Amino acid sequence: MRRIIRTAVIVAAAVACTLALAAGASAAPTWAPASSATIHPGVQTLTNGGQCTSNFVFYDATNVYLGQAAHCSSQGGQTDTDGCSTTSLPIGTPVDIDGASTPGTLVYNSWITMHDDGETDANTCAFNDLALVKIDPADVSKVNPSIPFWGGPTGTGGTAATGSKVLSYGNSELRLGITQLSPKEGYEVSEDGGGWSHQVATVTPGIPGDSGSAFMDKQGRALGILSTLALAPIPASNGVGDITKELQYLAAHTSFSVTLANGTEPFRGPLLPV
Image 1: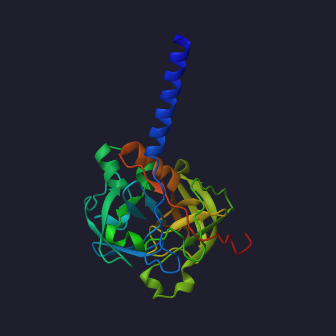
Image 2: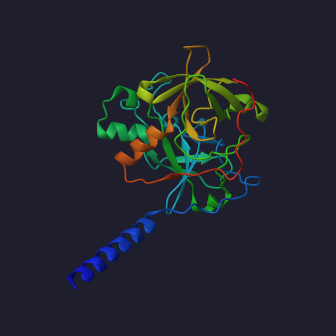
Image 3: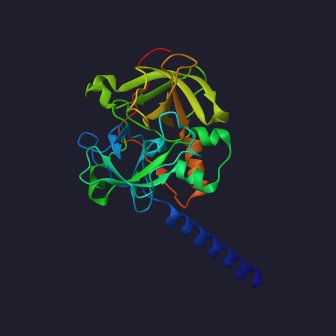
């Protein structure tokens, strides 16, 4: 009899645990069709007048977020790239989103989090460059998570060894609305900063205003976000912060539990040979 009771208790506990895990999981929202969505990866964002390009769409149980680079809300100069020491606009700052009727709200900034937590690791301070902008509920129905032109992303955990293909989509005002120049295809030159950063070379390179753009690997998995314009190891190469490490830092240092949304459009894959 005791064994039966004990078994029943164990089964009940297992069921309760399963239900708790199911309750904690966030189902993906119903997205707008990609053909008509006005908010998606690659739209421009304006933070206190500073233009950047959004990267991926994220969600949790109650909200939808658009990713941008943390340095897009920096109060430092262009050479102030240490997120642990550079001041930033505060959480709660409004962010204008192209295609939205109402400004979004800055709710997470890795630079602010690192500064508040006293982060001292040099690689983390240099390359952890992710911010989340909460989309106003009035605009959530206008969102689709697909990357323009390329489709995807197909998941997280993207990797790119030296010479591997990478894909992106920039949206700088400097392109004067010429969308044919927005898709970018290239390859990884090197991995830097203990895996925190990927140095990439693309056709065409990222330019000011492309900051924050999403990068995917050749399988369409989310790889990172455009963080820096560099002159080495080759001219006009770019530094791309690793999104997996950035999301791990977010989860370890905040109460956020967000999911990167997969695209609804099929991933096209690289078009050019290596």
